[in-house]
Image (cartoon, rainbow, N blue to C red; front, top):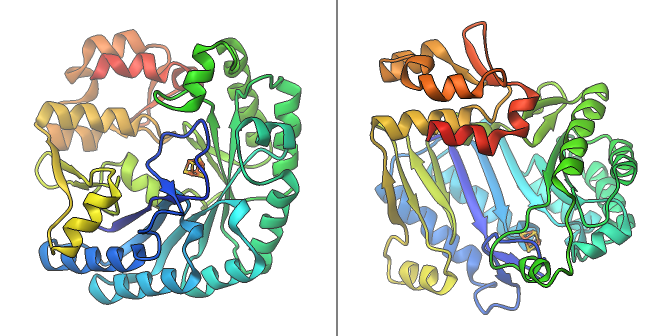
Length: 376
Ligand code: SF4
């Protein structure tokens, strides 16, 4: 396992569209959390072979609520217990509403070398609709501070398909984000998740995300504009300048092993056909287990050959690079078309086979949820 994910399950306030596991910072466990995470790292080091890590990702939640000294202590422990490669990509997700130049300089000095900024939009009315705590001006200021703090690998999140958002409004937002010259962009369409306040509002007909046709138009317009601006559309939702793709997320899409710590995190072993564990999203249970020296993770699934094949396609076809036929055949003893003749037939012409690789054309990514079902 060469990748480490650390889930920091605290937010200042819950955004009404979000279904990631997090609690508010007022939780009594907020102060203790870095110590719990370090205890968890030590427990894992005794039991699992992992590292040295080539990527570390502080995700959440809002990892930027951690103090720089906590981040430094956690990374020092990771390096001490498992090893951290010299060129390791070390990402921290940051909420613009939690930052200052001093904090960002502290994160940079602590060893964070990639910042993923939850901008979402640079239009105040859209940020308000999303229930975000920051303003557009604070978003811009956070980017300026990040640059001054020495971050030269910056990713910005941008959301589209927002209630009452027109295509020209989205494109104005895109221009505003492009003017900040991030190295990487993650662009997500708003989806209304089960159990969120947005779902309740939608039920009451008080929330109307973009209609499917408009969301499709927006997706295509983003692809074209960001392509023109020099960003490669290297995964369904992700764009990068050359050489700036997120190496950590590529581990997930390529079905390589990773260790995930913190409540709500998953781990994956690529031994055999693969197995996955999760740490239940319950911070009290997590704290109890670690105080008692118990491993908080639970076994989720062990894959058989068929399951591993399906997941290789499910994840691999998210990437523009797609799935390598020769590697697939070497691993599973069958080529993709041989293993899934009906699914490949149904996916044509959106699924392309070229130069020994299977990949989705843009039209295939637009139909991804529908087309991929045939492989599962
Ligand atoms: S800050 Fe991020 S993780 Fe926290 S509630 Fe909002 S969207 Fe979810």
